[in-house]
Amino acid sequence: MKKFVEMVSASDPPSLPEVHRSILVPTRRNFWRKLVAYAGPGYLVAVGYMDPGNWATDLAGGAKFGYTLLSVILLSNLMAVLLQSLCVRLGVATGKDLAQACRDYFDQRVSFFLWLLCEIAIAACDLAELLGSAIALQLLFGIPLAIGVCVTAADVFMVLLLQSKGFRYIEAVVVSLITLIFLCFAAEVIFSHPNFGDVMLGFVPNSQIVHNPQMLYIAVGILGATVMPHNLYLHSSIVQTRRWQENSQQKREAIQFATLDSTIALTIALFINAAILILSAATFHTSGNHQVAEIQDAYKLLSPTLGVPVASAIFAFALLLSGQNSTLTGTLAGQIVMEGFLRLRLQPWLRRLVTRFLAITPALVIILWFGEGSTTNLLILSQVILSLQLPFAVVPLVMFTSDRRIMGEFVNPRWLKILAGSIATLIVGLNIWLLWQTFSGGFN
Image (cartoon, rainbow, N blue to C red; front, side, top):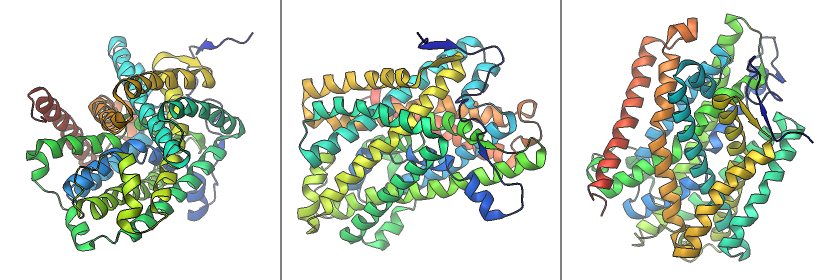
């Protein structure tokens, strides 16, 4: 009988070896053909920036504070664009993903600690995806939330089917689902008739965000929901699915096109995240429903408040698409982290079931003990957990890509070192502030 677990050999094959360098890149100098060839990994990464965890934080932020936190979404997205470009640079220049680099360049104890934190982050992310899908099933079909949580475990078979067909199939499904989600929220924004002057002002940073503890809590949750720790590991690996020629010119070209791919994809994610908050602000905040934070409450109020019968159904349908889309990338990230840190390969179906079990258990306990009304608080908490894990992925990424001994000629230029270091410092500072406010009772 085939072993469930196998140790990776000393030669250290790449993560996801079945798709590594499996997609050809045209050698002719045709911009559009090359752009299409490199397009794909960025959209898998963008999925993590629009998963159900974003919904809870964006809905709560929009209903309670109007358009103010749009500036946090914009800042988070700009940070994401830069950080994902560093992932591309690391993967192309070194042939290692972030997990492998941590294992190779850090002390074994440090590497193990980082792996443990990353697994916690993946479990928190999986929890958000699972709850989002279960809530959508309940809203659309009336399936009890506890049963819906269990039903979503079956999505492991969809992931395995797509993986067996090739990486391009996964990318095609992801892009299709993102397109549908984009169209759903374009319609919702049109239905809500937001004041676009106020929307534009919302993208301007406001010092109140830092001084208001409740606003800061949601803002850090938005940061955690937008810049995902496991995405940094994921992107540095899946960018290597492209087969470029191993020379400086081709590597530099690969970095440029892969960065462009992720930038375009993350711009779409920015629209979707902003649209959720704009919808909440225009529908709930302006009507005085400032306490709407539950996804279920938002679903019930959307159609009556907007006067559009299909608005609630579109909202729930997009939520279901978001949860299922996030499932695909969560599985891949779990494999990459396991293989990269521990030189350990689990069969994909087993890895997925283990991750699902870790997410299902707390979800079921909280739903059964505290009731279905606790799910949105759980979603927001999952995103704060992700944000707290973020420095432990960002700091190593900035360190590695700024080290000439590791990166060679592809090391970050001075301006990029300063900018990346500033982002890492900001992320660490926000998390320290969040912990201080939490334990000092600032959020009470």
